[in-house]
Image (cartoon, rainbow, N blue to C red; front, side, top):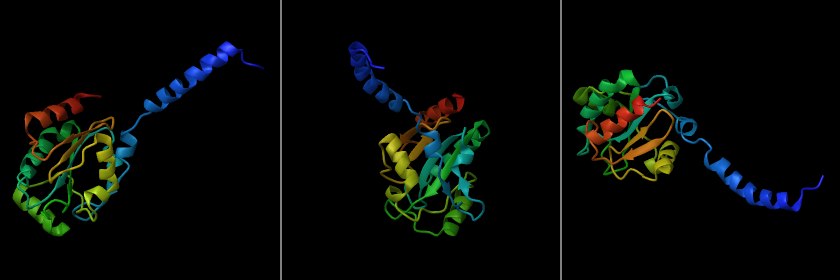
Length: 187
């Protein structure tokens, strides 16, 4: 069966456009961003991010000796306020910036508990730099923004879309709480 010349012309014009369209709308985010697991700060069952599917996740690279360390308190308050609505705050200690997280996992856990009553999930301290961590690489790729300091925040909505917030953005400030509320209200 031969294709008439006019049909062949239209097919050659439409096929590349259709192919680009099909690949540009392919879903990204949820499956990839949540395909990671971490060991918890206090030894127990691994933290599988896929268990947070359908929730809103605020990921924060933390440090105990940073000028932003008091944000632990407001992160805990944010977590308590929205936990029942589907918010997970996930703290990931890292020693990347100013060597401000020098302690062991045990030291970090004691510090967070004693000083801020942290109850949100915390992973063990990254064994690599943030730039070398595959989970962070995905967050950076999704937003185009890498952490420049401790307490950088990534908000992952229920569909897996990621937004980035610099260290100075206060957890209980209007910018972040509005984003959390919007993400929680979207279904």
